[in-house]
Length: 537
Image (cartoon, rainbow, N blue to C red):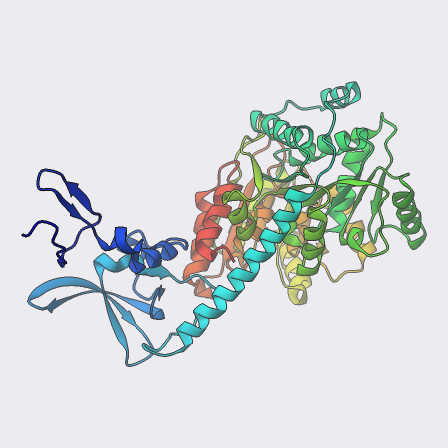
């Protein structure tokens, strides 16, 4: 062509180039106009859980197309278009609409993730609902992002004096720990101390470790450090029973030091509660352990320095909002066995620091997990085997209306066993009396609702039986399994479902995930699977 001429050609090029020999410069739309619109769209698609291959899909699965919304995947079909025979994914929309998606455009599809109870409404091709849904989702995502940015900006701006290195008392208290720390536990303790000593920014760390893997000891050492610095510590628990247990543990560990540890929950009389609240206000109480009662308006601290939150996912929205505000002012340590997907999503995204304790305590055996249809003979056998070795059994039936009938049935299966019942609708005092009775081995089988998932440590209880396990969430099932296997004995967890229950795909996935991750330290893996099954929320 002519020297200096400008030629426009239509071709597929990913980028331009310079050909010096021919004194030719070739520019594509990428250099002229920036990234193409299609590439921007694809980047958005990959922010969800994209379909990496067709193998991820089964006919009948709900899918979301970036442009057309929710439909049902019906399988792969072959069609001839312009003389070329190709494979297409057939997506069924609201009748009579169907869509054929070429297999090389699979990245425009994403598996639908939503509520387990109600299937989603299938969209109409060319309808306006999908555009409206996307607009709403964008607005919600923007609101959540703004909220997170505000929260983390406030945390970045907030400052507190860094903590001093460990005192001789700290070293003495830590060396009195009766067990050998696992390598992961040691690392978590170091990371927490690094946050406290090495930065002026308030700490916000998630400690993720299986039930009984020593997360509480990490919190105890952080709490002691805060008290040595003249700051107060609040330990927030989801249940009164768990608060009472932490109270006993903290008091025991701090007994040799001038540290005042108090309990604030419904187990305390109004007069005792008033005294504790006054002690917190004037700085006479160093460590307070309690339920959401700690978040009440009348609770004021003299100088709160550290907040320890046990199992944050068990708290309601209002309590979490309150915690969010506290996060910008004080050091926060969150302990969890199975983090809820959104928390995990934030931690994996690097917004929150996370320490993982994967090592089981020395001598601990993995819990043997059995998932099967319900059978009276298997239940009897499981209870008998546990009682013969002097142990105790948790039997979970999550319906208060029929729990006494079930307890009667268990009694008939094993007539000589001592059986008692515990559920959340019992008077508080009676519930505490039953739980403590089980702890002191006054009876053998506790027939209970899921109230025990954040309950007392009973090292002598090493068989768990869960009825209708398919009705419970993965985090719940996992927490329940963590009630057993807290000593060096072999523990057993039986998850029963009824043959006629007609398990849906997700219930099946949850039970399979439990069976698959039966090993020690599998909490994080389960949370990751939960993130896949449910989405980030």
